[in-house]
Image (cartoon, rainbow, N blue to C red; front, top):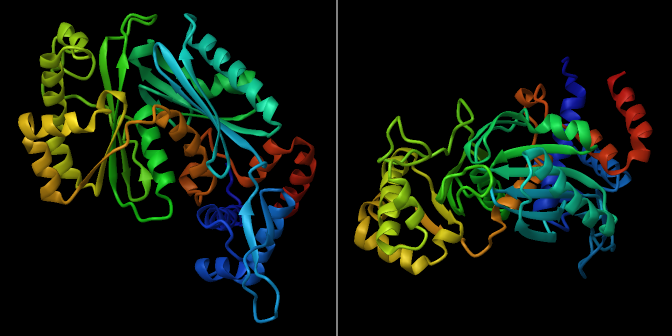
Length: 402
């Protein structure tokens, strides 16, 4: 595909301006130009296009006045421009959220999944959220799903997901065939990293790790292993890191051997008992947190976030670490890494999935992303929000390329 440099630069500048408004609601044109070191005329043109496309609105705010005696004009994202759906799909249950483009939560739902194939699960979930989107009267911009498995996020392929028995499942292709919406799929642990990047978007969070766990019932439908499933999300250099083979964050604990299925070499019976038996729970947790020690010492993150219901008793976890796995706390102290628990919100993966789209929407695109199946630009997002504007957007795009 031939890259048009003018259009690429236009999208990059648009993302920079929109990102700044996202991070600083109420910011002025002057402050945007100063912060981004762009010509005021460039900023004015971008803002005018964003206002015309109903992405941004402006108004007077505050009691301060400029030297000319006028109140400063503030810029904010239009919450009604569009919404994004985030799914957390586990073998036996789901969690779903709908968020507007500011990141505000509009809807959340959780429940059991029907005992149907994976295509049927996706259809069930879409039927659920499309009813809510219709009630809201807000355009649906994108759908993003987080699942436990190895995911090629750039091309929308679930390469392997043992809990569902999936191998090279074309998630993007399924949606392209059945729904007219932008679609993405991501590893569930990586979704927590996208969420932390969004929550902390106004600060320099630095490199960090997220560990999330969820209870797996086992043999609900797909023959999934029972016990506690764990994943790691990494953010390095301000980006979620996927690894050379899309396998970053897939844990093999120190007890694991090549013949073992799953993440650990611990016996199946112990994994089942770890949900309710204290001794089994301690054995599992020691294997898990002990395996984190060399990872932390090598990666040197600034923050280690812990998510998920199996970790929701912070005092119990910390007491266990002091007594049974002190090397984990010691390595945190050695490298100066903060340990933060955020375990009360069971919708973190679904929210993280939705905020993945927001992060991509407000990020400067990279040339390497242009060729991916899931790549999109601002003109495409506007046409998704307002189909009646497609002809206008197309003519404007053709004028840009001329």
